[in-house]
Length: 289
Ligand code: DGL
Image (cartoon, rainbow, N blue to C red; front, side):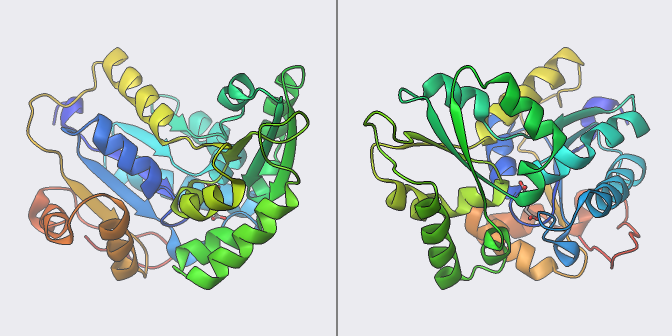
């Protein structure tokens, strides 16, 4: 099969990467996507590097070697911070796009030069994040808030817990607003948190800018596809395959909820007759199409 016709692989510890997939599909409607949610092994954010590297390499192997993806999007800040370098060195020929908290755009946008960052403990404690923060130290002060439990509450669609944790973590950032000394920009440094956007925005106040990474990642992916001559030819609507070891129904429900699709259209696009290769055999349960 010519490389352009191969799908793009996107993965996250769970449903968070759907926020990236949504932007990817809007920017690249003709592309086929395989989305892998490692739900049975989530969350990653409080687990430590060795675990996250292990899971990331297993999923990358599945998507690259068994599913023939032409480009891999690591739609997880925690996995990018811990493991994107390991993926690139294991498959040097593969085009790999990672996600990182939007510190650079936030530093540029902030007038008070104080930026709040909500992310997992794993991301905030990573060397990659420390380097990014240090490179921008002259432009803004970053107030870091690890949000233990928030990705998991979003994963389980647990509204009261999401509300309580958002209140706790946005409150812990300190004074928000546009007056001198206040945080006027908040970065959502975990792809799950996009699905708590409304709660976080309400608690932050109208004047505070909230940044996430879906659209920049989609633009970067399009650029790399074009540069590499990898774009899928033709204008037909691309297909989507959803994979999740042990939690397929929950993933399908989340996708129907968050992908701006109606469930019936989505169901047709995940039809197993879509022509993708057979299901994978990852150690952590079986995925199905
Ligand atoms: N969605 C992931 C991220 O962007 C990780 C959430 C988790 O598994 O803790 O960091």
